[in-house]
Length: 87
Length: 462
Image (tube, rainbow over all chains, first blue to last red; front, side, top):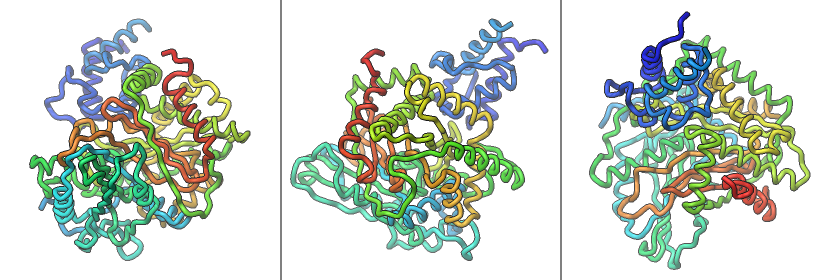
């Protein structure tokens, strides 16, 4: 199976957040702040596990910086970079 | 009147029932209820009469606040019996006038309240104690003490925010919708409704609860120990002290926590420090614990949605570490990170919620006895909570500036020790609740010194 593109990663992460982890409405976008949307310590770990299940990429907790968790887009960029380095 | 305030009884959540069982056990063993306390240290200008009026209005509009808790027919899952809520059971507001200037310490009456009893079967769920200094001109200390199942820590802060908003005229006492009143779980006490978890049907719930029990039983291979020793019958005599760090010290601690544990999971940094502080006292006594076992509350409130004030929306994440893992801070933090990830991966939090749900049906004594047997006579090595920013959006309460604020909580005579940390206005509050006699004065000094060393950095380096 081909590794997901960066755009596909954004969509995957956004869907996990919207459908599994956060109670958010249509105002929540791929650029929305994850912390402001309610992402907390438990939810972020559940998010990492869901990303691993969907993509096979594990994001080490040391990479959970405010910059990488700024939005679904920025987290996808981090995952994409990890995926690129591993390939 | 909003829909959740109607006459039908409101079922307790699984976590509520777990806490109800804990309350029964605390009363049996230590003659005190399982209570929590939120303290506000206020500047001058607190509007006492306005507060008393507000509490009366809120109590009238929200029968859950004075509802007896009982099992229908003595067998069915417990409920807030709101149709039988009596106005006389409204939360009392007691006022104490002190002529002298306030000290840095906590008023004695707050300890007395925390060591008291509140009868859940009579709707005695919530109380306020107000200590005024110089008639209020030199400030006021306010303690809100509640039966622990009425709110979780997050809910208690939301309640205070809501009271403040009512006083400002932005909210009214009967405006709580179901989602922010008793919570989604009130509409359906089955399963994990309102918790954000997805357990389907009694079979899956049973499987998860069993997995939780097996994991807990695994702790018995190296059973935990507390400084107070195994559970025993003795009167509860708790005191607590809160050390407030300076802003620079707090910044340093927060930076270390974020760097070492991650900015969304600093709780593990604080937990590691508290474990090592207890370990230092064990070492001073030349005692060796086979392990330290500590429960940490996991917040199950829906993320990003208006969350409930009343009721408990939590599960438990348990950690077990061994003395040889505690000597080095970085090693301990690594172990805690690994355990947290492994437990979340295996569904331990969901399993815990499922197990708590069984407490709705099980007699409270049975549940307490199971916990005691699994941990070989101990409930835990100590209790711990890090609740993050305390009332971050609130600077004033009923006309007075909030100078500081923090949580305290009842802890049974064994383990006899609980550390509760929070941030208020850029300063770290380190609260330590202890059963009198569990720590000698010298041991308390060792405990606090070790905690400071780990929070601030042993050698002063970042």
